[in-house]
Length: 125
Image: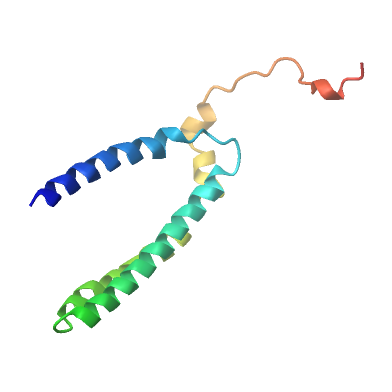
């Protein structure tokens, strides 16, 4: 049917557009980007959990037997496991101490700061 071809073209086009928007449309923020990003990922997990629970219920109500529901039921537990793993395994607030004391980090060239910065508004004039 032609709707399949049109759907594939639409999804390919949207993939191209949103692939650009996610990476390039937002400007780099100097602060709190990590907090917002992690919160957004956590909310994505919540949405995915709601989706899997609802779809499992739909499969249970509309299926001829419990087969489709039993196939989709493990996805709820997988989403829960992935969400707990995301919350506990990734250290995004603090840099691990091993990374701070790594050989390459210690031997990295340090830039020399010359002069002294004085905020122009603070200078009496």
